[in-house]
Image (cartoon, rainbow, N blue to C red; front, side, top):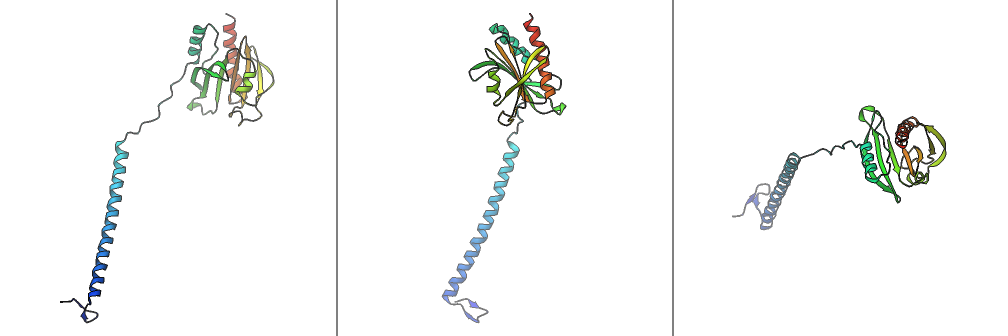
Length: 212
């Protein structure tokens, strides 16, 4: 017996029955799809939380201080050719001390950076370059121009100007000195005072070793 539609006061027609069932099915499917979507989102969030909780999160490896004087002494003993280096001055430390090469030159390369406690910024690099002259400075620090000389620690140093700091790799200061067949270059992003402190300390070391 056909279902009576109250608002019509008569049995519903076959078409009305089909329409009602289709609408009911569509509503059911829609509610199921929504529930499935919510369930899927909850499962995804739980998986993400588990991954974040389970996967170990390590810290970056700590950079160990380098020992420029020790590395330079080892190179001197191995090659018989003097290699010059200094310990980091107060409020600085060395993070690199290696034998290196640049533009077909062989060299000893040491890098110095300020300690965190000092609140200083910048860097200073020391290059003891074998069989080189001041042309190395202009290769290493693009755009560097020799301005004049200055005596620091009993040695004569060439003072370079840096017209374009960005082109020079953020280098603001550069000082170089010829030591027999070696060219020793100090360069970095620092102040006039600090680069001269490095040069004075290094000059004292060079004078002691060349006097032996």
